[in-house]
Length: 408
Image (cartoon, rainbow, N blue to C red; front, top):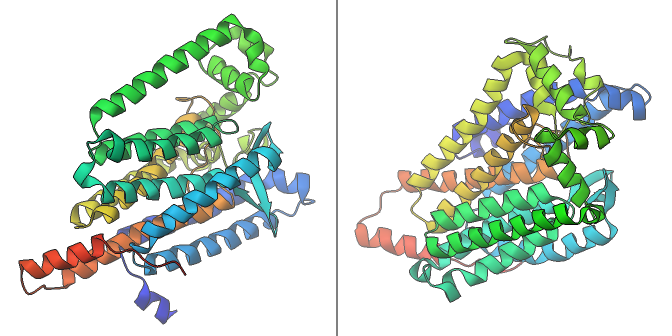
C-alpha cells in the first residue's frame, strides 16, 4: 500500500475527482440494479455490485498503469489502436451482439461486454492529437494539414454510425473541436459542417417524402426518438412506449426534490429502463436530490477545469492536445447523458463515464484519466527540474516532441 501511495503521481485533484465519482457510482449502481437482480439473479442483489466493484478495481489498475507510462508512448500506440478499431467495428456490425435493435457489443471472456466504439473513440482522439502535434508547421494546408486526418475521422464515424448514431455524432463533434483548437483552417471546417447540414437536410426531406425509408436499419428508431422529443403526437401514439423513458426520468427527478429520498430509496428504478446506465443520473437525483445532481455536474466540470490548467502548463503539443481531447470527451459525454435524463436532449444511449455500470466504458474512461494524469505527472517533473539555460530547455522540448517509441 505504501508503495502505491509513493508512486501515485500527477494532479492530486483529478485523483480526488476519480475517487469521488467511483464512490457515487458504487452507491448508484447498487441501488439501481435491484430489479435486474430479481429478474436475472434470483434476487441476489449483491451480484451486480460485486461485478461493478471488480470492474472498477480493474479500471483503477488500468489508470495506475497508464499514468505511470510517459505520455509519448501513446503517440505511436494511437496509430495501432486506430488500425485495430476498423476491423473490430466491421466485425461488430456483422457479428456483434444485438441489444435494443443495435449491434454495438462483442462479448469478452467472463461475460464482460466490450463496445468497440469505445476503443474507436479512444484511439481516434489520441490519433488526432498526434496528427495535430506533428503537423503544426503545415496545419493550414489542405493536403497535409486537413485531408489526412479528416479521412480517418469520417471512416471511423461512418463505421460507428449504423449502430450508434449518437456516438458517431458526438465523436465527430469532438474531433471538429480538436481540429479547431489545433489551428486547422476554419475555412475547411466551415465547408465540412455546411456540407453535413445540407446532407442532413436532404436526408430529412427524403424520409418525409418516402416514409418507407424509416424501415432501413435504425432510421425508424432515430426518427421516432426525435419526434417524441419534439412532441409529435402521432409518433407518441404509434410508439410502443411513447415517452415512457423520459416520463419515468422526469418522475424520478421531480420526486427527488432538493435533498432526495435518501440512498437506496428510489422507486423509479423499478420502472425506468436502464436505470444503472443510460438513466443513472435520474436515479442519483431521485435519491440525493438536486444537491446530488449538482455535485456530479461539478465533478465533471472540475475535471475539465483541471485538465485545462494541465494543458496550459504543458510545453509539448501532443501532451496538450491529448489531455484536452480526452477530458473534453469525458465531460461532453457526461453532459449529454445528463441532458437526456432531464429531457433537454433526445434519448441517445450514452453512458455517464465512470458512473454507469458497464465493461469497456469503465476501462476506457479510466485509461483516459490515466493518460491525463500522465501528462500532469510530466508537467510536475518539468516544474521541479531546473534546466541550466534556455538552450537546454529547447533541446529537451525538441527531443520529447520528436520522440517515437519503438514497437514491442
